[in-house]
Length: 102
Image (cartoon, rainbow, N blue to C red; front, side, top):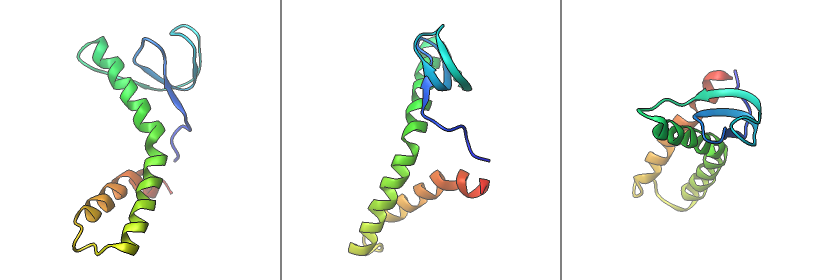
């Protein structure tokens, strides 16, 4: 199953994350996808903002890391650049949802 398409936005002054459009905390239209929790309201809102940034950047970051690894594999010896293995492991984690859902 695929996740709800983005972009995702945070309802202003709240800890709600939606796939849709939010003009104010009382004027929004979309599908609620998350309600961020935290120790207090400030932390809840910060967590919601983090969810939005991470989800909206995910596909671009995966694509950039794939492109970078392609260039590195053509130009560098993976045995001499251990960071390539770390990048490959991170990419595997980032793409795990898609592999399981296919």
